[in-house]
Image (cartoon, rainbow over all chains, first blue to last red; front, top):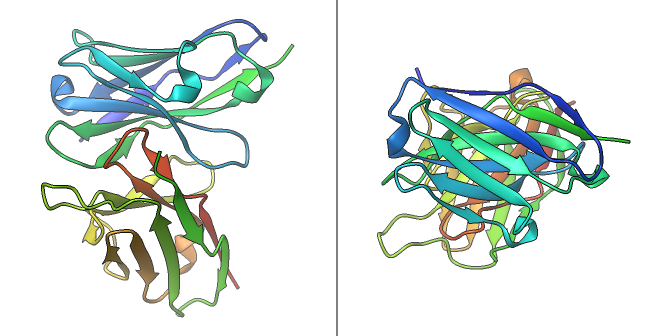
Length: 119
Length: 112
């Protein structure tokens, strides 16, 4: 059974950075693309970026360019999303989601990680 | 960037009655490979989105057959033939034909 298990909730100060992990199990990690999507309180879904672990290449939403870094460690089947220069409006639940390479569908999502940015 | 527009933004439905949600994209979601990259998700309170429909009309594993998707090009519809209490939540359409991925604003379904 495919599972994406994310790291726990974080509380951060404005200006700091956060790194959220997403560990995959039940499938072949290097056959995935992993996207990161965030959801501010009471708001909709916002795509941040994607990584293909097999190639190690990432693409980012223009809004987050320069502030977000998405990486993957094939040895541990874990993807990471690091967001820097945090602001209060970065307070959100951050989700990872997987798509099988060659497929089109983001079928499994992590449980979400709440990041709270507060002084 | 592709803009996804859902209507209505909220629905109140009596159990056993049908419901319908529209999603329009600012560009065609038909790819040269013949597939249309349109998906429907349901997000229940406190949970991540769960996939209902992929590539316009294909139900994901375990999704009840009261859910159906239709449409083509830029106009799409999700229908629930007979709403049940467990269908409460926010429904999102999503496109993945082009980066950045984009979502509709969400449609909140509640039970009367």
